[in-house]
Length: 204
Image (cartoon, rainbow, N blue to C red; front, side, top):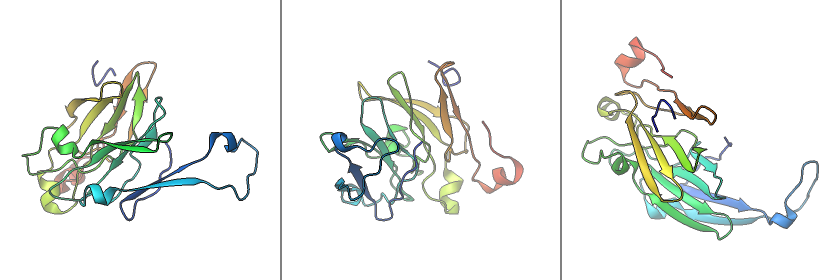
């Protein structure tokens, strides 16, 4: 498998707490039906109790073919990276897959952080694919950022595959998609360093 040959709207986590609403499947609303006053069961998990550095979540969430919801927790920290999680809507069990994507990327001693997964999480052949994004937006954070990684996560085994930094110093803010027929993964790279912003643009 080669990198070059290889959505759902989400709510913002203002308090770093993730909420899941799970409807009883027997009472699930069908197209065209109106269910007024229906009660939803809500489970709440405080991400802040797991890691105080996590401060939000945006776009890095999706439901996979195994029925689980996979989601990321992001940070603006200069000392901690993004987390990756799984939620089982049947058992209502939360599992932390990885606490710090910086470590998964092998950069825990770099001084920089892979602080966010702002990309969607897309799936192909039992693998989930996503991209990292820089942590803090202060000049000292931007200046030392090595670049975004594209990562794969195999649901059956729990193994990660790091495809590395796509383009040095560039981040992957949000865009990633897979072409299942051609088995190609596309990402869009964004410059954040002032010199790159001034002299260059985005790359597909």
